[in-house]
Length: 126
Image 1: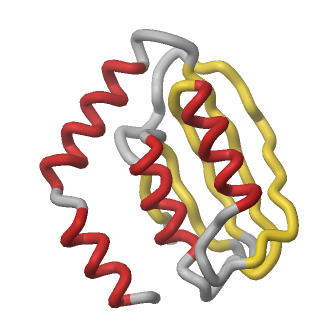
Image 2 (image 1 turned 180 degrees about the horizontal axis):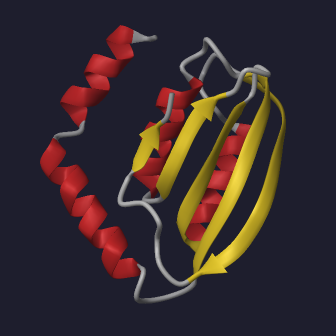
């Protein structure tokens, strides 16, 4: 599980800023176009801290949703937020990933405009 990176992330991201981030996202839901998209990432994406880096990037960009490993060796999840931020996250999921990962392809599905966010943060699911 990348314990050294996890503890560094916990120190670098105090809870206060995450609560403020959540409030900012809630405020954004009333202005502009919100999007939701499901994703599945194929390649070497398990055992390389992909979920942790995805959570960190989502919080940095300012989107909400979730990420989890699948039994098929892929990573799946959902991203929601302002359209331009969702597009940034889609690009990251397609081209960047965690430093040790290898992304072969990323499938996006169920992309739609939404009226409000279904999540208040971005989380790792198990």
